[in-house]
Each structure stands twice: as C-alpha cells, then as structure tokens.
Image 1 (cartoon, rainbow, N blue to C red):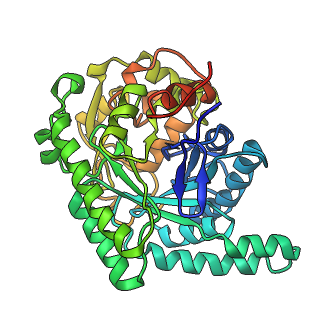
Image 2 (image 1 turned 90 degrees about the vertical axis):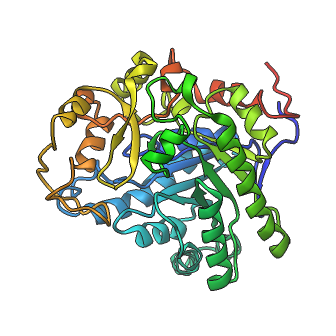
Length: 397
C-alpha cells in the first residue's frame, strides 16, 4: 500500500502522482489509460486520429474521431472500475484540425482532465465552459443524483509548456481574458517522445539532438528552466489562492528520474515511453518490440509535417525519408498547418502504420530513453517502480 502521497488537481484527488502521457495514434487508448487509472494514476487517452479503426474514418475522419472519443472514454472507465483511485483524461493537440470540437466532446462525456500542447491552448478555458454546457444537456434526462454530480464536477485543464516564456504567455492570457488559471501545468522537457516543443537550435544547445543523449544532454540547463516555470506558476497560485501542481515530463523512465523531478519542486511526473512496453498498452506487439530491440544510437530527431521536431526510432521509413519526401496518397485534414504539396510525408498514414504494427512503413515515435526497455511489464509493475522514487511514498513489495 501507499502512504498519503497524491496528486491534487483542484477537487480532483489522484492517489499516485503519476500521469501517463498521451501517445497517438492508437498507442494510449482505453486499455492503457484505464489500467493506469485503476492503479491510481492519471491515464490519458490521445485524441490524435482516435477513430482510425472506425469504418467511416477514411471518408469522415473528424466524425469518426468524435465518436471514438466517447467510446474510448467509456471503455477506459469500465477498465478502471468504480473503485478506482485514479482518473481518466485526454491529451488533445492544439495543432489538430477540429481541436475545439475534440475538447468539447471529451468534456461533454465527462473527461476528468484535458492536457493540451503542440501549440498554445489560449482558448482552453472558454472551451471548458462550452463543453460543460454540452455535458449538462447530455445528462438532463438522467436521474437527479447523476445530473447533479456531472453538473458539479468541472473538467480540469493543464497546458503543456517547455519554457518559462510559454508558461507566462498562456497563464497571463487566461488570467486577462477569462479571469481563470490552470488546474495543473505539465512541463515537457527535450527528452520527450513524439512532437517536441523546442526548436532544433534549442535541442542542440541542450545536447538533446544527438544519438547518445545519455552522454550529451545538459540536464542542469533545463533543470533551471523547470525551476523558472515553477516560479511563474507560483505567481498565479498566489493570485488565485489555489495550488497548481506542476508535473514534469520528458525522459522520466525510472525511480531515479522521478526522484530528481520531485527534488526540483514537481508535484508529479508524466511518463509515456515506459508505459509503451506494458502488456496493457494499446500499441501492437511489433511496436513494443521495436522499443525493446532499439539501441540508443538508433533514436534520432526527425522532421514532422506539424512543423515541429520529433523523436523516433530509426527504421526503413526514416531511411526512405532521408532520401526525399514520401508522396502523400490522401489528405485526412488532420493538422491546421499542413500543405500536402510540400510536406515530407503524411503523418496520419505514418502513425496509423505504427498503430497497426507495420513498423517498416511507420513513424515510431519514442522518448530518448526507449532503448532502456528490455522486456514487457505490467502497468502495476511500472507504477510500483516509479512510485518508489516519490519522496515519502511507501511501496509494499
């Protein structure tokens, strides 16, 4: 059992201060998020092309995605169980077409938390209000007890930031425009997987763009940035007289990483890569085996049609990309800033290939520490090992 070490996000109390990072396409869906919630953490479903398995996805991707948001959330809650001491939320990318509708749909169906990055979620507080209105309408015919519960609980919001500057911009604009602030802030560092909130120059300055990041990464530089972000957040804690937990992400793989994050002042950690190689992860076995078989020097920075650097495992797909753009067969209208004429490849096709186990034709997003995976584990085992790095937590073996 655990001592009273929890993650308080407003009136939402999560037993263990572990957030499972949202990973798309199809990597963190109901199974992973639900099992993390069952073990007392915050499980995040990725909304990125979440409806790719729906029969009408090719024709109407947005409608398929909206439908799948409700379906996956319901499944995750069933897996978590009614006695779960964790929670289930969504990671929703600002850069996606349909962002506002995806946020509102997730809130409508009762998501506990919305974590949002890959752009500045400047209108997120307004979207919460719109989503809550839809939720009340949805449950109007429900029994009074259920209606009152859904009316009283407000979905919590957390921006993803990578610098004190971006944190300041978001929180200042939310304060000025909506007279509100964040419920939680996620700091995503340069060792994260997938899309990164850093320029190539920033990654180089931090020593995070090499194939031997374990030897070149200048941790102390970004540690200072984390401390500066926490200071920015504290200004709004004082103004709104509430605690705003800061969760550190990017390169969190084991108990030592967890311990270090807490020493910097974090209230929790967000972990993505470590959860990929769990039995419960929604990714196919071939994807998980790519992590287990990867060497550190095979993990590299690449380009994304989203206009952001990304980190992935080198494979046949990236080697083809090195030789020139890969023709786009179809536009799924997934990214707000995407011109199919000059993009290097279709990110939807590349990520769906990964979700289907076609690893030679896939973009295999991963964190810098993916090479550390040696075997498949259970979510329970991962949670226990991570919690052993939380100061004050007592984990019974």
